[in-house]
Image 1: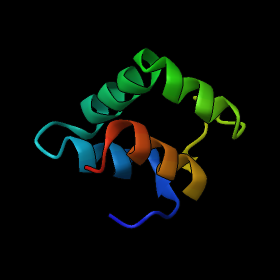
Image 2: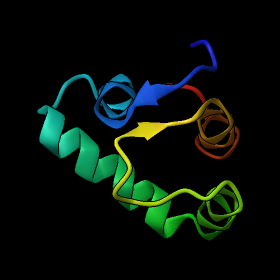
Image 3: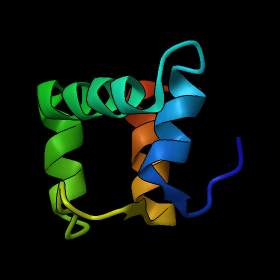
Length: 69
């Protein structure tokens, strides 16, 4: 996948296309929350759990820590 801004739901569904969008969002949020290194790296980019989109930099970090979908 290309590193670019993604809506959270779009990226979550790329990681879990076989489940509902809501469940995919919950799963991605859990993966981020339980990966302390990723959580800390995202905090450095001013990530907030309530934001609707990931920036390109945040997507790059997610791919680095979780792998590409």
